[in-house]
Length: 168
Image (cartoon, rainbow, N blue to C red; front, side, top):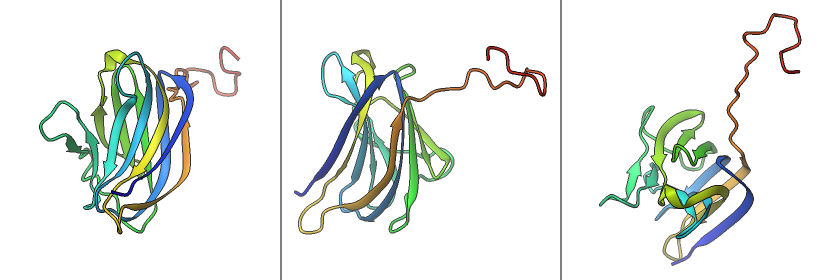
């Protein structure tokens, strides 16, 4: 088995937005991407996703008999090959879910891969490929960004036009 793995730890927060562009060229097994966690016990993969040989975008559910579930909201989550696509994962601890977007379209919401009670913070990401030599899996990743997911609490819509927004 041939595997490539890139992992990065970042500032620990209660939510993360992972955005990247991917260009899969050959997938014989799966191209994996994860959101990592700081945990009190157990493994550190909070959310576990993959792009499969048919282009399907799936999440891993550790509690079902068929652990890989296809993300299917908003139409099939199919990642084209030999083309750049943008994937965005908005992950939170509470609720313990991650929304997955493909080229700006919501493809589904995945549950946490590990027991949410053990997760203290989200703190990184991993990209991995697998496969069997000599072919393996090949994908190019670019424009990787991971940051705290912040929801706007004040959109200034209630403030008077031309006035300084309240609180500033």
